[in-house]
Length: 288
Image 1 (tube, rainbow, N blue to C red):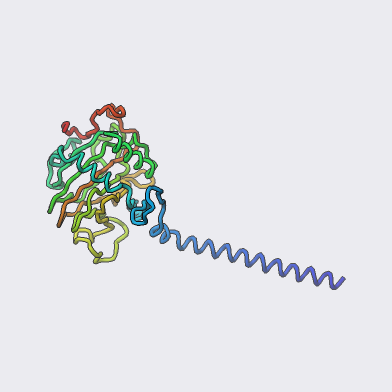
Image 2 (cartoon, one colour):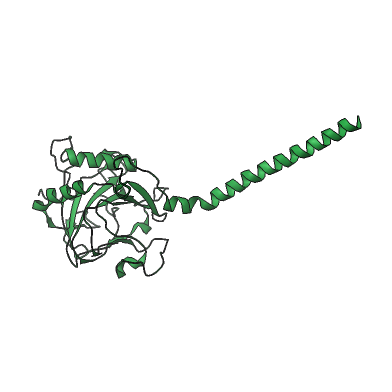
């Protein structure tokens, strides 16, 4: 009897130790997960595309900032696609304009010194394929997107700090507010031309290598052909995000080409029929 009782006590103690050890391991794993989740997300591949077997051309997503929510999509375009968009736009470039906050109309401004043009949504098979890829990787339907805007910045040209969301009520009637921006870089820029968020909560260490003085103010991205910057103009609670204020730094050397896809809260419909060639040029910009 004594031996049996002693055996049960020993077995109970062993079971208790094993249980305690198991809970300690679980707690340890949870602690490590909690401590490492943000650093891991910031540096590891969030998604890898099968389009390329070459490591340097592989598509992956890098988290840049939570406030505003901004992500860098590496190698989202091929070199050929980037060149194609530039050549498609070149014959139609006009002086860029900005939206007036009161009237919602477009007007020239020294805030923006680039040249640009709008493509129709679904302009051709290549554009349609790119737009489908954007929809896939942002989880925002193609129908919510405006037509691509192609922009060209030459030496000293820039886009001063601005918001992509609207302050007027005219431009939100069709499709609602702009909730996000997908900015694709169509060329490398040797010096300058960065996209910077001066009011980002995260302030990178000073003296970022190979970045211009303009880009030192906050989270910034250096243009690299084929990459894209994806950021939200709204917070997760659907409020306008003032930290999404951003600027295109002056181009110091070389040329900067980019393609912007603005994404709306709802379907953006200007009488568009796929392949019909109906204009998707918002803000009363004349046909090009």
